[in-house]
Length: 485
Image (cartoon, rainbow, N blue to C red; front, top):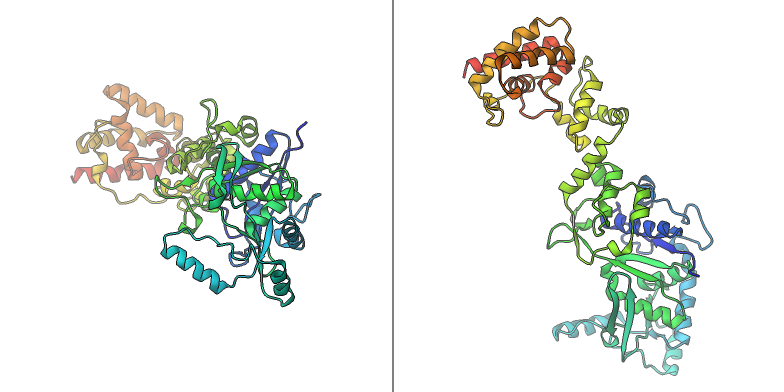
């Protein structure tokens, strides 16, 4: 019987949540929940040079906003804490010294100067920099003497000098690496702090982690991890290494290059659900045609076989299309609640029918941040060129548009009730009498009312939103402009 599935997301608090990190969290969460297992949050904060104040709160907030709630973690505890790496420091030296006793690790007393000189010589000789194992074969007498004299040391992993190491990845299968190319990595630094690679192995084992999802930049470290598990006599977890997210065919998406974080995308007007849905598809393909998933649907659909071995390219257009789906699927009252603050950035008029305005915005909205520009003509008609009336598709030009506006003006002037139905019926009666396409009448009306070719809603909706008095004034302005062409 398989033990309980336990996955972990172990971010470093170095700033905002990068898209790649959030994808790792999502896949890790889905893998656990698909199997009815536990999703653990561990904060790896031992790199104090890169530590950013407030970043832990960003991690908490991002995961919670996305619905990726953890079962164990720093704030809620659990049976295998502490869940902050800096609070676990006491154990690592004991584990490192256990490996020394087993002959799987050794004390290294090399100075920084010697290591720098070694690296420089290797680079000059076009040799990949590796520790030359100078201290690996020191006599016990030399080791005891150095320790007694307080000579600074690190503890290094004793990689087998011959043969090969094979590890299994759920995406890439079995991968074999010659031991001769593996460096005797440092496990414990001179200050007694563990290195990232060592702490990860010890923490994952002591927290009973069964599956590890991480970027494939760690593939090269996986043999060393496996050798550590083997040295301790521990069962290694299942590995799932995922490909990079790329900005384009040549460049990785990277936080240090200013590429989008989760917060950046929120600030640009993307919805949390849409961002999470899109990130799911960056490197994972569903079995069917559907690409829109709620979080619960993601859990049901997620399967490791859908993870790609090829890098995923971040496509802003696809993200926008997915966001548009979520915007249009909102209940009208929910859309209005979010949209009104954006409307009010440029539209201050109190006599505007916000329900009608939102009803024409929602089917056309892709991002809420687009709304201010879409409605900026409502308070004041912008200056515009009569070239806007020229439209091949609508079969309109300055002459036909002038004729249309002159016919529209008296009809709207004589309307008693100025509602969407009354304006619609009156204008469509005109269209029928003239025997023309709808656009011949309605397109010039749209331009005259907005000073734009593209607006939320057509001429009829705009007229009602603006009201009779303002609509008539704008139509007269359009006639005046066209008469002067």
